[in-house]
Length: 287
Image (tube, rainbow, N blue to C red; front, side):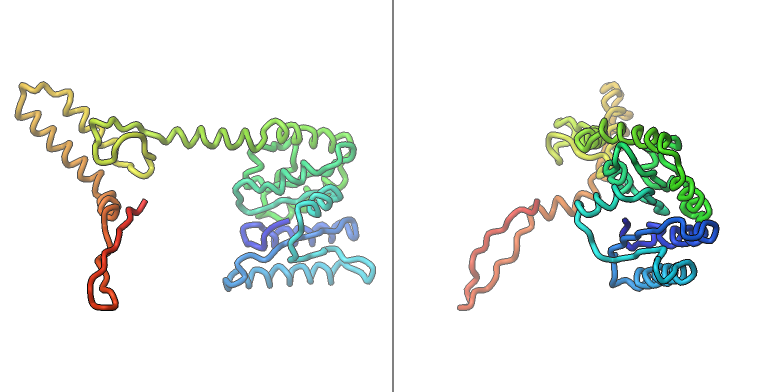
């Protein structure tokens, strides 16, 4: 189950399936659900054609009048329908070339029958691979179809006790780290980007905090201000030089913010009314 996107490695997966059927004719069939993505972009249309041509080749090469190796559709499915398909599949093949998390991998695991679970073949470049190790999922390099083919074959022929052991370990992780845990961790990481700006040091932006990524030069300004504060007021020349450094650091910090600050108070020009008189208009701050 993938969007029809070149990052998902569907073409490599089809090639892997071709190699598997050449070695083990008629052994297993593949259901590939691939809703179209960015169909108005030429490169994506070309990728769709390439994938469909490859699938047609495999079906012509290895299929019979009674059996088709690859079942392919671009139709979307409901979550409930997908869950039934995940549960029925002996092997879940999630092999993107590069992906964020790829929750399909976890959805596949969560949908399995605890008494007779399937096996997950997972790209080592999917984010889910950071959670599932080699003793749980069968990790592969998605750029090498032969690795995918070997993993599918191993998964399809894996003994029940090993399948249950692998699945149970993955399911324990899914159940112990829910969306609520993830969101809390995300917010904690986001909070680490805060920097506190004392009100008496930075009047222009007011109280509170701002994201350091938006103001990367604040640390330079803060360092210059600290250096200035530590100089003995009796040393007027050194104090003046340090103050110039503070001014330069502040100007560099404020420069990218200046346009935004100015826009806050821009009011539209009065518009002429139909009778030739200028009417009054209210201007609103832009937040």
